[in-house]
Image (cartoon, rainbow, N blue to C red; front, side, top):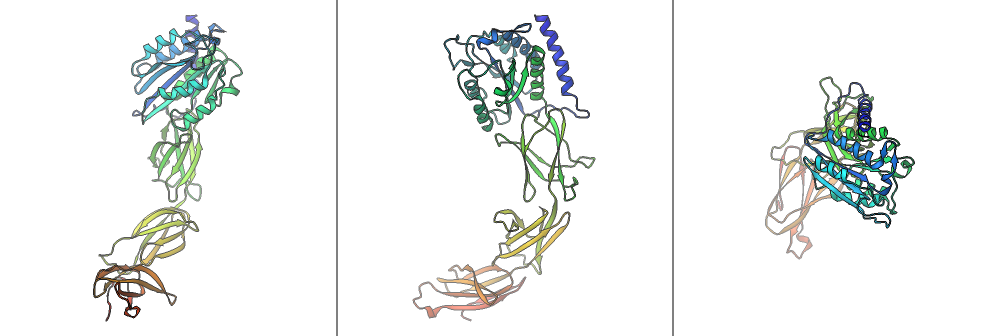
Length: 465
């Protein structure tokens, strides 16, 4: 049996490697050297695993093939393996749905320990798939930069009435592990188990070996993609934009890049984990989102994104005063309430082609609507340079307000403080201050004064004169 297993194993390796390397011109890159990969193998040891399966019993074949795979994993950097089994602690009947245990925890250089535990497994009991998946969440110690992978080998369905599919979905969403691999030994299991994760049919020994080797290849190697940022003409001309890749299931961030053209003038190639579906946030203004992007392992994937952009420059018109403070300019998509950017004066920013409403946070506020940004063009907005009103109220304890004249109507601008002197930056226009002593009991003691503000000028406003 040992000789036959070795022949089957090496045949599987050849078939597996050939199928994995079919993509021409694609470099297969190892997973990020700073990221640890952790693979938890879960082995079914229910009493049905003693059944005859081609050259030997199911459990003997699983032990032999998996042991050989462990040889190929020995000594790999940034890789840790663990082993959990179920159905091996209690005889059936009676049924024990807690019959699952972590036999070897994650650590470095534990392959021989796993091999010994694997060899000692004796099928006895039932098949608690759901409770096994639930408990394997505790098998992965806390780690912020680990790829947690589950490989479950089983020849049957859950005997305990648990919902393994729901538990798998929940743990994926929590980020405990990425989409697990399920290897079904025998026929008729796909329709029941593929909802747990990526399912492999293993109706014979060769299929079983191929499945496990393909899974290990996927776990150990990244694949390639490029994100093409398209302009209004569907040409890949946009670049220098931040992109964040999120796990579609857990919503956790996985990769952060700034889009770059390579030395050939095309979007640079990215090496990322093919086991995850991604939601990509492309941080243009406003940002663009692409959901549920899946990659084909071992192949290069082009990801198009419509991001046509032009520039907006906002600057002063007229003489500027060096003493003026800067102020934010709120940018919104035309007709919408949400602020998508805070633009600084005398600066240029790129925006997605379209129309925008601006709110300049001067006093009074200046609203500029329906500003259009075109492809690869620059829209220049000129804001009147501010002036300064130096208001002298004559004495402390004065209260009052500042108004601006708009269409022959006085509009409120701001309340004044109660200090003697106050300096306010204002847009050019016609203004009025209205004040009186806080302690006054007579309305007739109100003082008002009109004045004009011009760009780049300081206007003294002395009340009572």
